[in-house]
Length: 118
Image 1 (cartoon, one colour):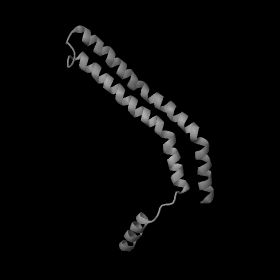
Image 2: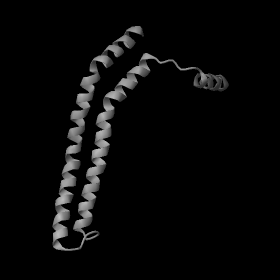
Image 3: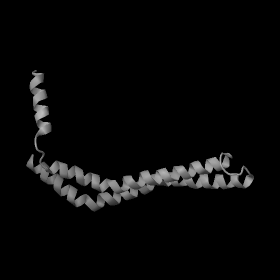
Image 4: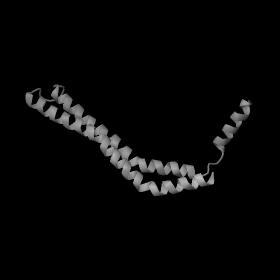
């Protein structure tokens, strides 16, 4: 096996002009369908974990006055944050399903075109 030839071909492919192929368009549509669900899931997850962390800090007297009122408030805030983290996956699944339904026709048509050409 000629490794120099393989390296030269790989390097030439890297510098060759790229065509916008149907496969790239299909990948782009797939990412476009999934992006809103991913952005929401990450954002909502981060926010709810920060809320849960704030509640834990209040209940363990890291922040706040250290009174029983702050401890109860911290427990309630922590439970709210944990509940948000618990429902995050289910909201993500619904948003992902909605995004896939929105782009399903275009993706299926493009996939059929690709499979018919090959």
